[in-house]
Length: 271
Ligand SMILES: [Zn+2]
Ligand SMILES: [Zn+2]
Image (tube, rainbow, N blue to C red; front, side, top):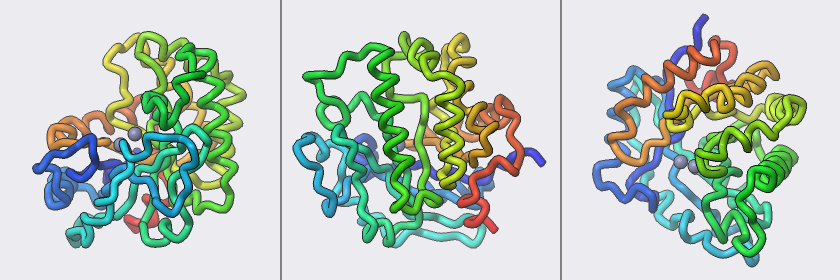
């Protein structure tokens, strides 16, 4: 059975600093879910848990958001469940910005290890050459570190946009090509084993078709390793909803996904 497009688990509301759009309300998010026939949506604003010591890595305020829980209670529908989550970063000291007590108050959480454009917070500008070789090793280390956090409930945590925000698009293919098939297989075998979801982000489909094979390779390897995938518009504004479903269709077709490739967490929430 073909992978059913019935959810979107990565959506920002107006409280995300990168949205700040009065139209991006929780009611608008639920309406988007209902209009598209989804059974599940989730709001994932950027968040840094104040219970977590961020050490000497500055800049977390740029992505953290004290209004994070102000969207509660979320509107609900019999047809479409609305989950409460967050998009959480790993800072340049490899600290993940969420604590177990806070995780208990949430339905799920997305972890972004690849926001390498957040200079100062995620990368140290004094020693971060933006070369494909450096970026690849830095990112690989961060992914391995994330997947080693067995104290976290990784079965309800998603790994965001694997191929986005790493480096300029002119160097993306070269950077991704530095990951060997074996390295990617080991990473995604681990993700599958711990039950972490792998995100298919509508914005990660390259506009430049010549990049497509390089971008698809990690996800194909993830599929071969038995990972579960979830869909993500990453919408910050209502315009981000417009082409989301078409992008999801394209992801499903390109990867040849079946319902068995869906993240278990999504299946549980839509059962
Ligand atoms: Zn992100
Ligand atoms: Zn996002």
